[in-house]
Figure 1 (cartoon, rainbow, N blue to C red):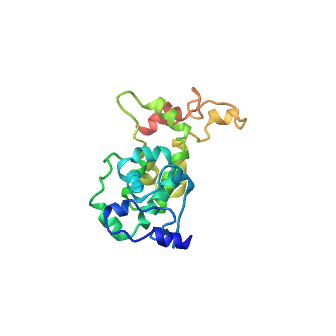
Figure 2: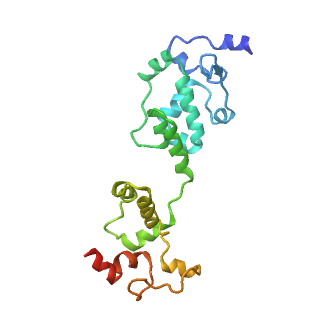
Length: 218
């Protein structure tokens, strides 16, 4: 294997030779000082350095549909492991990817950090809270949508102490223990508002619709 590697992987002197260099088991392309091989990427027709450039620059959307986040990160490692001289020659001759932002473009064009990788992995499995849909049904309209980025930042901008932020978090997620909920679990004798005693004590009534609360806000 070593003799074959030395025979097969001579240092290329032209751009065509660089593109035709095999990626796998190549002594010039090492991760953690070891040559590499991935059966999945090999099966995806990633065989040569030219294929790697094609994956990154000319077919990012196809690449993203075939591979997962960890595979894309591995491609980034392969690209980073190419000898500097190769990358310098390739950068002036390879067509750059489209400007459209995709998951793969983030990997191909930006410097990676553990935070970015974490956010990308979480974005694949995270789901919006159920309270988000409830609030949109109550307060959003066809002409105006709720600005969730601003809404979620309100606890941090309006309060400094942990208890106040916790209180606002419960409001945003519709988990404040009001009488409607407490009555369902048998913790109170009535679901009606503790102030006006006229309507059920839900979130919107407790903060806006109750006549006693309206006097407070005015």
